[in-house]
Image (tube, rainbow, N blue to C red; front, side, top):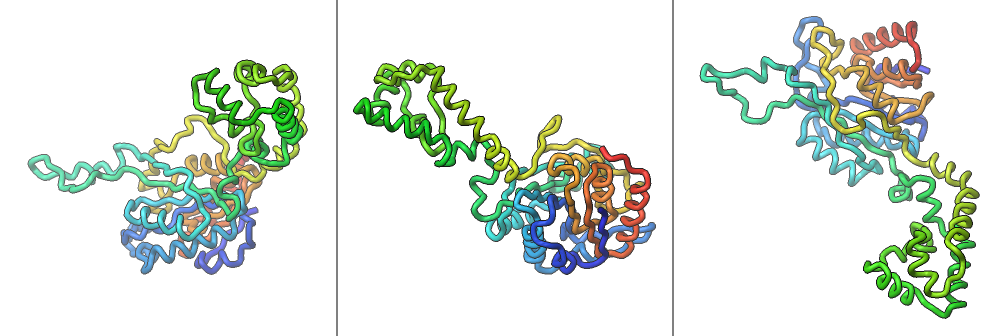
Length: 353
């Protein structure tokens, strides 16, 4: 499914149903007032300078929050650190998004080499700051209220924090304490005596919080000397059987996690050359392979991906190449037509990967 819309994303996004989008991958205006060229003519991009930019950004971000599934992921590009810091603050204070990664697209030393090497006759650069050869990609998970702490737990982590799980072992443990006439303090004292460590792990052994059973060494040096009679092998077997019985629950918990599939060289700095300026459809165009990688990592095949600042349609092309559905919004009619043509051309020659 490819759905392309020409118009203001602040209005068009209102038509998108709640919790219907898996991934938002977009490149909003950076608000730095740079002129662009199209067909060799210098033009002022009407989105380059936006009054009340932070408030405007919050508006489209909140729309993204509304339409993203609870497991949804948001990426957006930027390159102005001052505005990024303002955006991060307001996102933390007024949305449910949680910053996961601050990623850097390293364009290489050859990027804008002539500007970088713009020196006076004495060989000194006119720059008064470090020349920027990168852009930044901010990576967020959608974390609705009530899931912020638990939303990224694995299925087993959730099970181990569920008071209803492992009840037979928990009840058996409490009955053993009563039978032996000992308390947690006695176990803590024996633990420190046997290991030389403070008994921090006791808050997990047989408890509702991060449930664990002791290791074989701890069981044999602490619990058996205190009078527990069950061999460690039998305790481990009981634990494994209970864990296996929770497999369906574990899988259901895993479906609540935000999508993230690690790939090779999985780090937050991406060394990819930019598209040469004479081959770009748009001054801010991102390489399709880079967008394909983000889509594969942060969504599943068949997912719905939104780019609310579509530009020349590179995200749509990347979605076609990776077997995802795509919704693209672009306010500029010229760029919209470029995107439409690129995506329609790609549809006729796509082999899903």
